[in-house]
Amino acid sequence: MENYGRLAQIVEATIDFAIDEKKIPYDLFFRLMEKEFGELGFRGAPPAEVTQKILILRLDAVGDFILTTPAIRAIRENFSNAFITLAVTKEVYPLAELCPYVNEVIVFETEYQSTVQSIDMIQIFETATIFSARYLWRRKFDACFSFMSDPTSCVMSYVSGAKIRVGPSYDISGTGLLANFPREMIGKFFTHPTFIDHEKVVHFCEKNLQLLSACGIKTRFSDLELWHDFEDVRRAQVLMKNFAQGRIKIALGIGANLPARKYPVEKYLVALKEIISRGAAVVILGGKNELNDAKFLEENLPAEYVKNFVKVGIDWRTTIGIISLTDIYIGNDTGAKHVAAALKKPVVMVSRESKDRERALPSFCEHLAFAPYRTKFIILQPEHQLGDCADDLKISCRADKPHCITQIEPLEIVSAYEKILR
Image 1 (cartoon, rainbow, N blue to C red):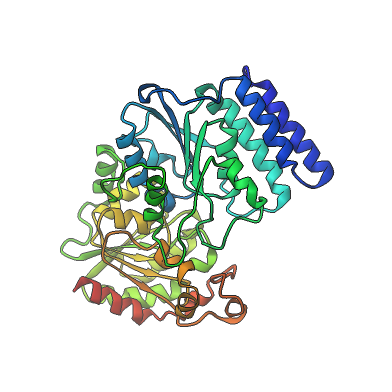
Image 2: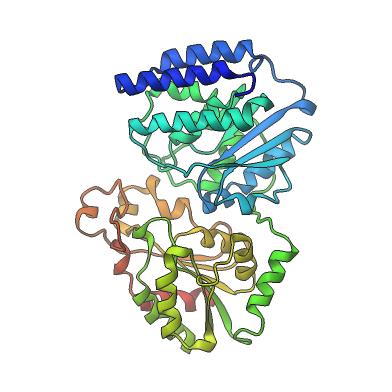
């Protein structure tokens, strides 16, 4: 723990207490940590801009990161001489590695947890402390910007030791303060907790910029960015060489981080057969969990008009190159959708979220809050949620398999494809 062993000891004592008493002693934790941060020189007035050190936390998925690129750019534009550290997950690192607006990118090695029970908070405190001791404390950050108020980001923002800590006071779904923390504790984790209006849907990209604006940070542009290099493009060009020349090329994204967001491949097959018959070709994109689904589509579509990149196992930067060589994205709500949007490709997305849920809870609307940003798009939705999902409209389809989304018919995809091309 270098010279900061006392900080680690406070966290360790907090964890021991939480295990014994089944609760975290927040008041005592913050009191002891603030005293130690002060004695070690982590507090006090920020220095002049030329010597400022800024931490940006983005500890979640690829799509969320892409939607944060305008905010990262804005931070650099407002703090041109600061030393900026960007912390991301292992999955996101390839997309962040070449970011021109930061001085360094470091990887948070623990998987992102969007919802946790209280016992998991112990793990979060522990991993945040280990990460801070290894990478963050020696920087003595003047400011930390966190674009999520999930437990991991809250704890990491505070344990980083940053003097100023900016973050949203409400979680991204708009359902209120996360139940993991007492309400008054949000103001301890963040020195500048920012309330975002949830009377209407605010796109996640714009919500990030609102957070900066609330702190007096100006933004000039909100266009998304992708960072890759010539080699990434060259690999994509080699993989796509001479494929289906003269045909409209579709990037098909069949992956998703939740099973309920996956549209059945049997239905995709029906839609794709019709679309291919109208002069298109398809490249299949997804992760290792989609190997069987991709194989099924490849084996049942005309060989000369389909490329299965799931079995090839391309990385995210090559995926950018592949999508740049296509004409349209069709698929699930996944990171590839945001890559396509950043490249200004038109998007047809199949959503699990029903229209009646959107009407009942407009401020919670998932598919509009994370819609393809600043590009043409059509989002296909089921009319209603099914079964138990219809009982509580505060939650979108909760099944552990394709469920509400299955109501969308293949011909709806065909129709949307034709419409968006026109």
